[in-house]
Length: 171
Ligand code: ATP
Image 1 (cartoon, rainbow, N blue to C red):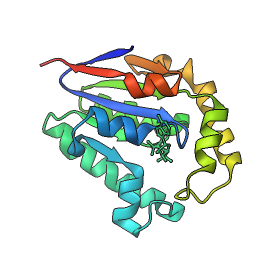
Image 2 (cartoon, rainbow, N blue to C red):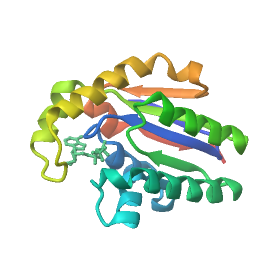
Image 3 (tube, protein in one colour):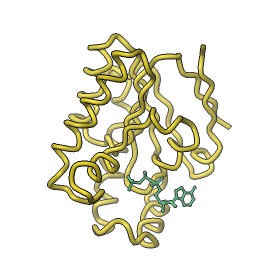
Image 4 (cartoon, rainbow, N blue to C red):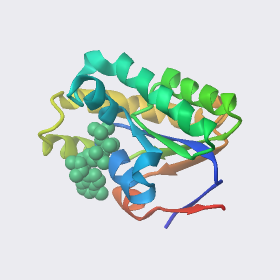
């Protein structure tokens, strides 16, 4: 079983394809206000968590709130796929801006598992090829995370890892 030790104040990036369990993990490990989810912000700005045209507005809003939280010294989690280097660069830059530790928790589940989960979901109106694309990007990202500036990197490789991982927070 994996235990992740987090400093009291850090900026956590969840990194994983759709269906890897980011939101489920975030719900289990963090308080509701600590988790800023791109889906939730798409709902706030456009009423629909799948509205891709709302992505820029959703992230602008998400980062606005993230800045307010970090300015207050509050741990913040960004629940988005974050499989693209650009998305992660923005997170590392934000952490540097507030002088907090950028932390990555990557969910690297087998593609078969992701595709199987995707097929049984009715809330994701895109094809399984999108999952394969995201999983590919993730795989290529994993060994770069440290060099990108994430000071602590945890990679969870199975559904069981994701279900059982624990977080200890330093006070
Ligand atoms: P998205 O990026 O699409 O929002 P996500 O990575 O946040 O996805 P979740 O929303 O946590 O993933 O879970 C996606 C789907 O996978 C949900 O339908 C959830 O019920 C299912 N799921 C999550 N964890 C598990 C698990 N350990 N075993 C089986 N199904 C799971």
